[in-house]
Image (cartoon, rainbow, N blue to C red; front, side, top):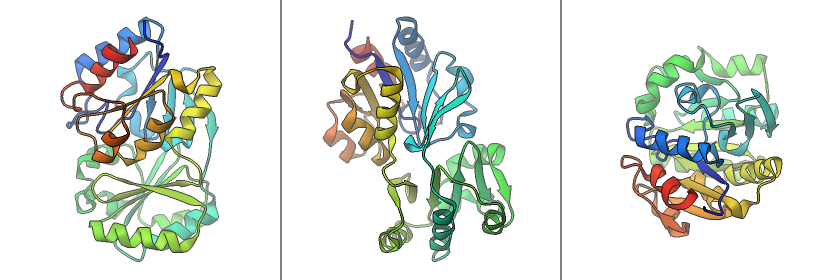
Length: 273
């Protein structure tokens, strides 16, 4: 039996294939792992509302390291373990930064908030593959900035979706100059995911390990993109998907098949079990 007690899966580009589905082979491998006493968790940039299509398929998965480490949640007890939020003052300043270019911004708590006209044309921001999900689960406002100014709340993550890579670079420059207490990582083709300073999937994993009395070296982390780097660095075994960005492959201990060829099932069978 492997020394590893827990495996943490990223979702998009990892557990989910190119059609945003979990393969049957991967589902079977997850259930096998759970039945042998292993812990399987989700370590994703998504929040609860954005996981609604998948949780019924994963009945034995109890813990969520969600919203890029800002939101730890017990799915069985249906209660948060911890939250680390961006303040209302900082959110208002981030909104102002998005106005310098045509940027779709997305406020993520346990719910998902977007502006109606942005959500109706997500392909414009290179996020068309998520159009159906956002149409179904997002809370939409005709003027999200005005709504937020009148009803402010802490935000777990502030996503920015851009029309071009250059627009994303311009936003990164503005963020550096702002000196706001946030960090950011690149995602998708032209997106930025902004979290409170010091928050990432790695810090979320360490908190969850403490909660479960599991050592980080007893953990396998599986991912494919920039926002997975921190969790891969703290896990005992870092697994890169075959479709991973090169920067992820460069720090991984092992590389498995891509998300369309059951790389996650391979990680379970070869390394967790």
